[in-house]
Image 1 (cartoon, rainbow, N blue to C red):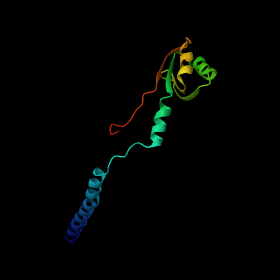
Image 2: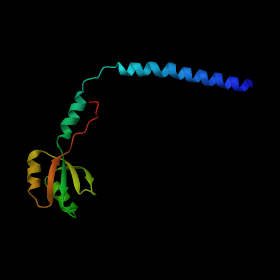
Image 3: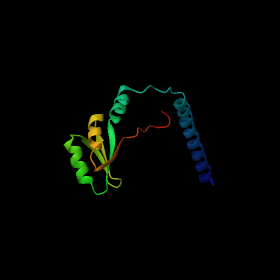
Length: 117
């Protein structure tokens, strides 16, 4: 019976200790002011504006990749299941890219952000 009383005291103390540590931390987090975006975040947003989705026709991955390399664009990523290349480009080279029949369409990569921003 003495062991059960000791176990109860240990549980009670551990719960109290956890509450003493967690409650002040949760209140301090809520009072922290929101900071303005840094220049690094702004630079990232500027760079992302130059990323495009290049949708090519089914079976035309090789031709689309060759066309992108011909225009000296950097391929960032490939989504083969959707027939999409993600490239860094400027508007002029994108306009030249769209004229080819292998390319279905080109669009800016969507800018995603957290709901809290």
